[in-house]
Image 1: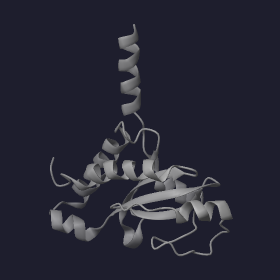
Image 2 (image 1 turned 135 degrees about the horizontal axis):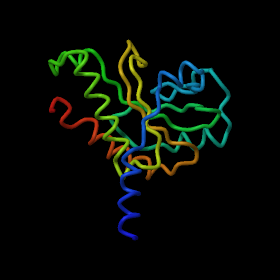
Image 3 (image 1 turned 90 degrees about the vertical axis):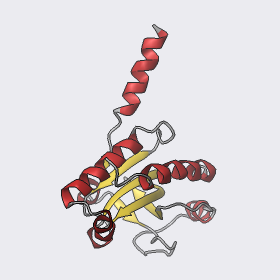
Image 4 (image 1 turned 90 degrees about the horizontal axis):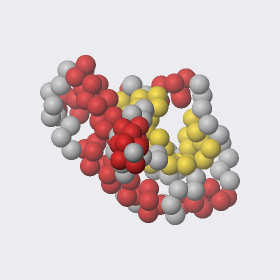
Length: 164
């Protein structure tokens, strides 16, 4: 009985769906408070405790890190961008490229190390219409935890992209 429940829990974790960046943007639920360089955008006020939390960020990742407000909650949005030059370098058709990005996002959603974070997938939502896969880390996520999860994400999203 316990074994069956554990199997069901593992299956349920794998079925986690990615959120849609396109829908989030359309519904105006996302406010960028900083750019990827950490400079304030002026799009909203940043409370002092949030600013202090953000300034403690010390991890490096393959993602661009933004301080944002998502659904009126503060947090870090770690965005991986996939642009046209990357597609051309891989020699993939646009259709195949988008399919691989969706597969990578699903892999991230199903990863046990990322299980408590929202994965957000965007088609043509990034700079110069890049596709995006983002991870949401709400305030007050511990930065050591966030950095570890970003290492897993880096591995999943940056390895074997042109295979399959």
